[in-house]
Image (cartoon, rainbow, N blue to C red; front, side, top):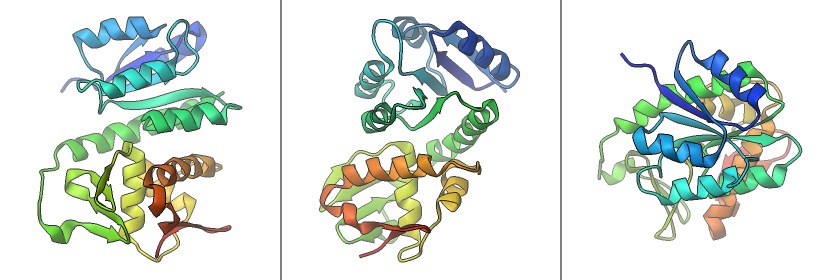
Length: 232
């Protein structure tokens, strides 16, 4: 069975080589220094997952991400952004542009590899899902309707485009209406692992999710000190 393919776009030689060294045992890992190098590789073969640095020479990671999401061939590519720890604006912007996850520098190699493993473990489950038009499978809360099998979300009948993680968070909350779900539980159930101090990751995804839900954003409620709840 072939190894999953992971592309790394990082112009810092030390970081790129370190990631290649760490990932090469379990993955077909390939490294690139710019978006243009990535484009040439994508023309030949698509990866299963892309690690994309925001700060790149020439075209930035965010500009490259926007292009990837607008191209049907790469629209569903799983992308983890590598971001500066102090740049919350870039992380929010990246999630809004369609990034599935992010890791802030300096990052823990253990954390990053756990995120990659969790993502690659869950992606085949999504790809194998067959469309199911049974209305009993719909999840509805107020104006929000989620079609899990089709990975489709509407608000007041209008389609809303969510990233992989935003969709998983929303679906999990709607499967447990009225219950307060802690950040730790969301990390375990949606991200597939549990790292202490990762509440900001959950908070950032809730923030971008609410923005995309528009008028229905208030249905995703913050319970101070406890977590989040989907409720009317």
